[in-house]
Length: 104
Image (cartoon, rainbow, N blue to C red; front, side, top):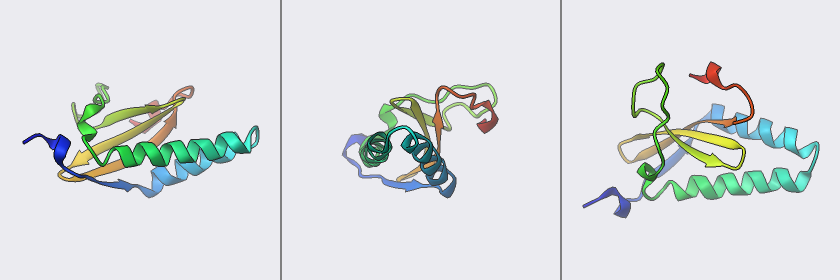
């Protein structure tokens, strides 16, 4: 039986939560509605990872173990997570317009 029938638990790390708050706070300076939409969209995407989180591609970089992290694009943001058994661990939320090489 494939994992598409399993339900995974999604855990958002403290660091990822702080990154989301930081992105939303910055966005709110321009548009509070856009900031609220970012948070709502993030919650929806995180919830979607409860089912078949393997559907998203691996994050490929020579500095990380192949297949360790997966990525999910949310407009201008990249949600970086890993699957550990039946748990999806959201580790980071980065703005794709910025250099996020420091994260790796």
